[in-house]
Image (cartoon, rainbow, N blue to C red; front, top):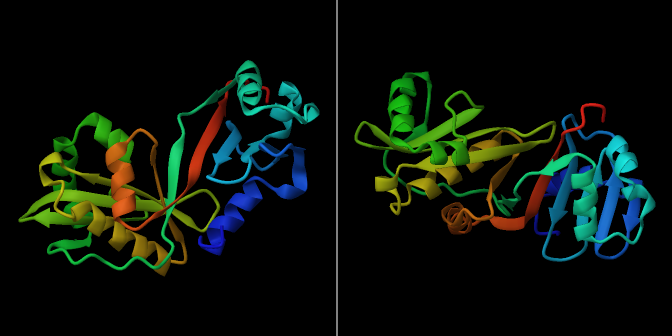
Length: 238
């Protein structure tokens, strides 16, 4: 774990607070965390080594009885959460930069401004709904960078502060006919460096079945941290 920035490790340590562990059986470590915000009452983090880390709100831990079953398995825990009214979202891969990102030299790469709104609108109109949903790139985020071919925006990344942590979450989108030219890697490097300059650690998330996004993360020099799941609580009384 020491190869990751301390801000990242500190953030996840606070989520899965070892001072509030109620289950620790070698394969699972379950913590009760009152700071989990509504409606997200459960989080799971699975890394290559060590137990699966789980954080639950106090109400959910009590309602599901997980805090009273110290030998519970991961499969049984998932069942308890489902029975307790929680829907677990599909997992995301988490990636981080081990070092300060070195910008990739690409012509016509720059930070986007309000003056680029029309070009950004055309860019979005050329992208599929699925790509827009997966990438979550917005001009109104904290910052956005883009690559142009002539006057046409073909690749863009945006970043926004993630929760209350000094972490900046990155989204990136490249139009299909502009892929394979290094644009996506360039905007990821540029916006990752920007985030570091603002005192935030850049974070790259993508669905585990999104092969293109996973390949981009690895090509950009990011290191996989683990898979993260969040649980949406369907019980309004929790």
